[in-house]
Length: 380
Image (tube, rainbow, N blue to C red):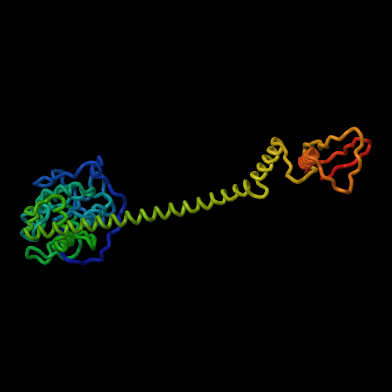
């Protein structure tokens, strides 16, 4: 039986698929509709004209005479191991009609143990497997000749490890002796018992998970103390997750800031080179700023009046005529070497002459003629 646990065994390999998968029925129901349920009294189709041998089945049969292969099991927590076994059974022969028997809860609980899924859930799971053509509900634990005849079964597919149950060393012994047994390979690493073992081993994890999803402690059969413990652990885990999230976001923020800082530094270096080049072009020795200053200086010199510094007699633009003291028409006698007392009038004249000479200081002196035909220059 495909879902009956016998312990580990076999080589863990899957038989290669023999030819393409045939669609269920004439209209290809396998990929569009669930499998049908078998009738309680067996198949109503006409009995086969003759019994098929294994060699005949492998050579192929007519389209209207598919090889009817039967595989049974518990199929609790239907998983990939079950599906692989049914895939092998479907591909045993070129033209196969796969019938799957599912044992009821009563037989399963009696001979094997308690199941996770109910029998109706297990029936429905098998109906939606793509390899299954027909499902037999409440299948017998041991296959009788009457059951094989009623359902017109040609071969029974199962792994060849002896299955000890119901007081028998191998419930498929008489099937093997009749030449109706076809062996399939088990899939190691996955089974219903393995899945249940994982749940029991990590019970606290799954209990906390379901409490978080809204299940009550009563529904989970969890005591008051364990309920509070699980809820406290959930709060601690949330805090840890929050801290971890903040830490990750902080790292991302720092990384982004570093990236932007590097970009800014590169951009600043590029711009600084441009700024320095522009500054040198503008304010350098041959820059435009010096040319502007030179031009502005020339314009200011052209627009403003020119003033010569003091003390340069040759550069003065204005010239003043030196004032000479008024003298009589007649030539004055040469000054005497003997000083005579001067009158007040003569002192005033001398004072006026000195002031006129002082006023003409720093200017060019032009030659003047003295009365009486004598010429001379006055020097300051």
